[in-house]
Length: 253
Image (cartoon, rainbow, N blue to C red; front, top):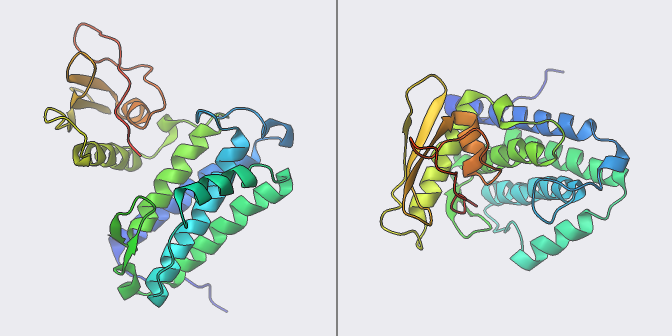
């Protein structure tokens, strides 16, 4: 019996799916390298243990599966009933025995991938609503999952790094950050952040980033810039020619 493949033939969507699947493999590998005793250690997400990260990533796959089912059937199926339900679900998931927690992560990821594989071309364009209330095509679930698995692999704090990310992923993350910062209703007028080259291979600059002393330009390797812009620290970055300290970035998600 021949292997089943994605129903879509859209080359851009297939490339996006590949990046998401590579990210899932990266996260799963990082998780599998953790011993059971290490799951209770702090993660890089403030207030979360590694257990919380694993539970969140598994439950995120379930939530995105609800959106793909919405797209396939036309029956509205929100990601979560409420933000409070989402938070409570993560807290409960973090208390699962290690084997159950690992199974949640693995099985939810497979279920989401099967939903993606079987989604018809027209369903990818169906409108669904994210947990933040944005109305997007179902194809957006692929990017939503991509950033979750790659970044939260780093949050497990066990050797994963933004410097391991494919260059196209780093560029997508930086573009997403710029888009979100610019769309914020509470963003000051001067916060029209721009992304550009910074004078060398692999270098980027985020210009006019809001900071307490006024807008700054943050420069550095693209991977390090993506790490800082997504709230994971600013090592190896410069803000200005005089080497001013890197400020805290504006909120991303």
